[in-house]
Length: 224
Image (cartoon, rainbow, N blue to C red; front, side, top):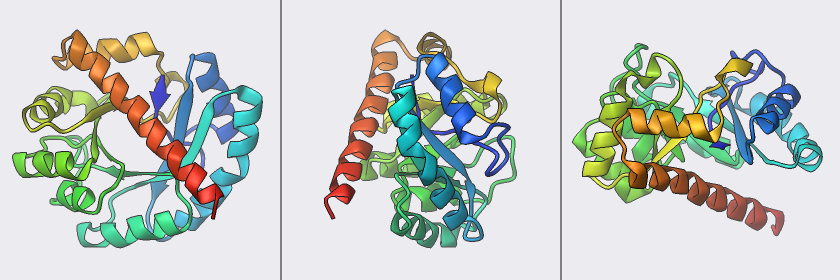
């Protein structure tokens, strides 16, 4: 399992980073990103504090651990600058909280997030053609989510991504230890939103692809 969207006590999650990573390891994870909810008020706090533990957790638990943020309920026209600030602070992955059907997210959040080239647009709800086409062009991954509520539009996200050649990944949006899933359950969720076996394998391959991109960024940053 590769999971690029999880939360800790640094936002509204239940676990400290070390326990989250240990439990992920026990589930068979090979990579996890900690992406707590952020805006300009706490970007630096989240990134600096998660960064402190990633090396040790990787070394002792034997899986990749990335530090990032989920930019959440930021006014759409401020998303680009928030992403730039997060990158400057060293965030290894940037997720944007999309227009979920179960939250009152500002209109155009999906569009501005994709235009600003976040890594993943989380639970994008009833995402439209324009946004899906732009996601394909800008290589922004659309999230199929395991999280209850947000998952109501997984089928729509899967179908529109397929139609316009956008890439999907599956994440958990973990807040509780019980939200973590293994790879077999990930396949069930992907199948449940209408994917056939080839499409399921492609979604899992997309996660591998993003993993390699993040590792390459990390390597390049280490050389500066």
